[in-house]
Length: 518
Image (cartoon, rainbow, N blue to C red; front, top):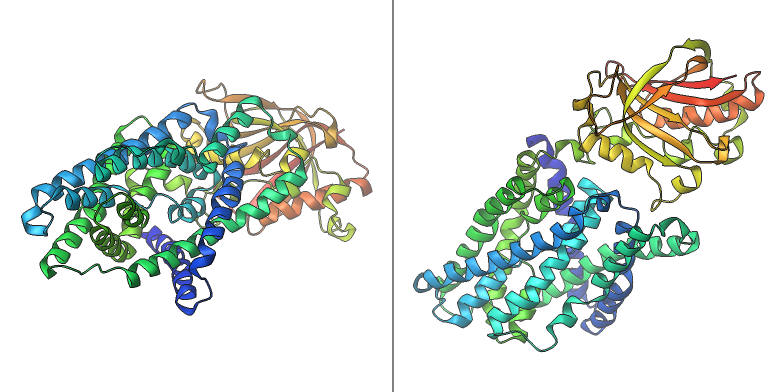
């Protein structure tokens, strides 16, 4: 757990550095207030919907029905409960913190209850856990926004504002509904590649642009507001209580709920990040708009953000241990068996690729020295997907990476009597090099140990045995490219019965590749 802190700290500092660039740009006059409205509309109406669509469509996390209704419910309850509890504590401690009326302790409750749920967690979730968790985060945030515009606004303003539902039915929320419908109807593979490329380009700008805007507006709030206005003891009392709740006590209850409730692994990944977040910046604007106390909001935001630079990596690291998410981290060493990327043959190195698709130089094939071997039939149990080369060239429709993510995150190896060596078996070829095929990742068994696992049989017969030596997965990628270039010059012809890779934990830098021949 301690080993993860430097990586998480680095990611956290990177997020705040980007925000600080936004603040600096505001200070220097490069990013003007007049530009904010147009940039914000562009982000909310175009860039963020593109990011959401790419994160949700084709996301295997949504094959689990609980990932459709539990994330928004979890998000709603976490903000609603945190807001009401913080407001009650603010009221009880009012004579020590200076919050002596409903206006002040209600504003305090809203500011402490609304954690930084949006654009600060996005890069952390994406870099630590990947696309599956990112899609679930967006759905979680729908519930957060529903709580903000009902519970939080009602608490500050004394009732719901007119047209509150319009704030919830925003472009990002609508995009989530559309993307889920695309998944349900199976329309993902039919989206034109040109459209997907445009969305990919736009989506890459969403997070950095929003973080720059947040940094600029945070700078405005610090320089334009007066957080210390009032008695000195009131400032320190409010700030100290906010830090105690938002950065100390609430993460404990948040993680307890995530550990005890029957929620998915992806939602636990989201919870690991959200639990660590400081108070959001948005409540400063919210309290101004609905008659709250902006000074309280500013104190809470500044105090928890400053302290959060220290507590965020500590809480995230602790959450990964408590929620048992170590195996699902993207940021692990290449030698670690926990990274699905270490084993995955990327789309460019697909074993069914023809020489024209891999474009491997002819002289690369000359470096191979395959051995003809006889292979006996062997039953392999594990997880399986059906796919094709065309689907694997598209991140929205590719299934191989998601297969490996599931294999490691669900700890399939623990269900197998012989998890090592691990096999990746390509079979059920439909049209040889350009048709559908199946890939099963698992281990050798006599009979399936669990109904959760599927099986296939490695076909007996002659195989060419290749070896991919070196840093993985680069060595496997290079080997498949060489294999594709090898066969046109070889006396052997591929049989397209079964092909497989064998990974041995005892020799992590050597992968054996077996290609069936006639």
